Length: 482
Image 1 (cartoon, rainbow, N blue to C red):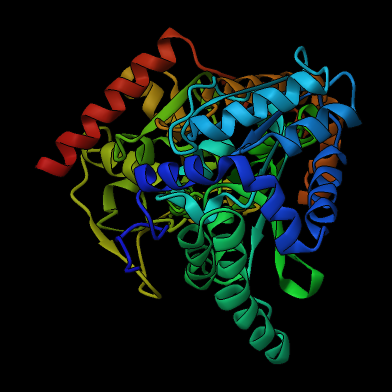
Image 2: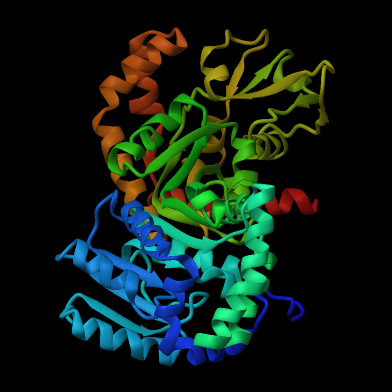
């Protein structure tokens, strides 16, 4: 057989036909080929699946129903759904489910792992045994698995692999290429079981599959070799990763995300780095400067929450070494495109200055400084200009510095929105404690921090803030065009 350009050696249609042919003798061949070890491998997968609890489980490539039936027997309260593209395999599964008396707890239906019909976050756990070698587009299947898995849910994939030990590898090659096809010819279908050996050889190394699972968004994706590597159990969890600027004003919005959802984590970074992490799918959502939202149509804002100021903000400053009338050169802050764009707009439209941007170690008449550094720095020689105050003077509107954003094609947007809003409420309820912690951390008085968190920074986005966002976006566009 030759490659097809897909992740599997056969097309989806040919795979389905092959499994239809071997359905009646499939269970017998599994027992013969594995010397009964298939029961141990499946028990390991099920143990991994049940380790984090849950009631709703999905068996992808359920075949004749062995794993689905075992799952239901392990937990009488479990609801197990199996999907498989092969009608003949499903027919065998239906007979076995009826004989086991599990008709209420197990349902096996036709389905495609790369395009499942289930709603988002439908299952507490997903298992798949000896199936993914036969899927033509693994990346699509892994994305679908993450989509239908609930936060905190577990993925367990069993797959036949080639052992790493050189001696075992020789024996394994002889067995899969000679003995198994002979068994298949005598018991079932010799051609199908020749395909088995070729598909194992074609299958990527275990580390590559684990990497693909991470790229699909699974956490803690690890390969666990079983029986000397003859089979590998791949496990992963559905969790969420959020990111926020490493500034004090982000704390009330970001710090409590793990508290409201134990299966979520938060990383802190410079604002300018968040977009790259979002695009690389390293994070699910980010508290991002609004300029990055404007520049990326593939992102969507979580409504109602952000980092805003209706006047004095204290942490976004133009620090001047010369009086404003003598400012000709400005150094920008590399951490935030939003604050830099705001400074450019204000210098041109509010202060009527034609300026030149300088970088590196060059001397400048003024410098944009943001975040905790701006809060803690002493006044500049010619004074500090608060950019949110200047924006309010120019427009009469508040200014929105950052908003929560996520990719428009994210699998679980409603879950992200719910976590963000719950975390915001928890953060605002904890403002007295946050104020004390940040005062100690920044070396500022508690009174200064209290005023900053309760009067300078606002965390709600309403109609006026949305109007300000639209105006800022328009002025940014005009500035780029001129």
